[in-house]
Image 1 (cartoon, rainbow, N blue to C red):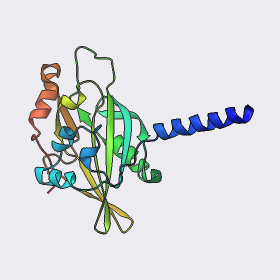
Image 2 (cartoon, helix red, strand yellow):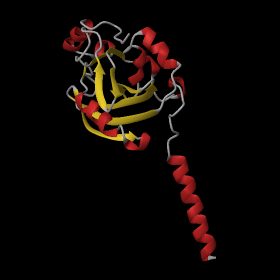
Image 3 (tube, rainbow, N blue to C red):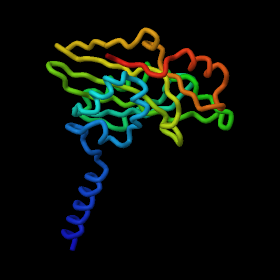
Length: 200
């Protein structure tokens, strides 16, 4: 009886671990990752580059969760790790450097918003390409109007280099607009940013 119970415990434990483990992104397409709001990414790259992403198989996918404190992400932690954690430190660093302005609400001024930063890994020719972008992980987060530019980095020969975005967007972070709930400062910031950024 004890042997039977032990076997049952092991079986249930293995089933639970297999259920909890996220499916690997390797070989999947962007459209297969239903938890990523495509419209947010689509606004942060050029239409031509976005079309190439739709048909490019992924090598890996890392996700960081944090809370927006002012305009920066605090308490960032990796909640999805692939490729043996190789890109986890980079994802955390990009989350630390991210800036998001415009998420000001009257109805809940003291509540911090949850933010997800995604790092998508692609193998291209003789290099590795990573693309990162962030969005709010809350009700209506994928419906906000996002303005900004995703970050694109290339790893080649053991060295990282960043592909700069348009001068009007590069290094300026993100801004969001939620209709009349944003204050005037955020609205003015948003109006200075083009609707789409992007890489060629």
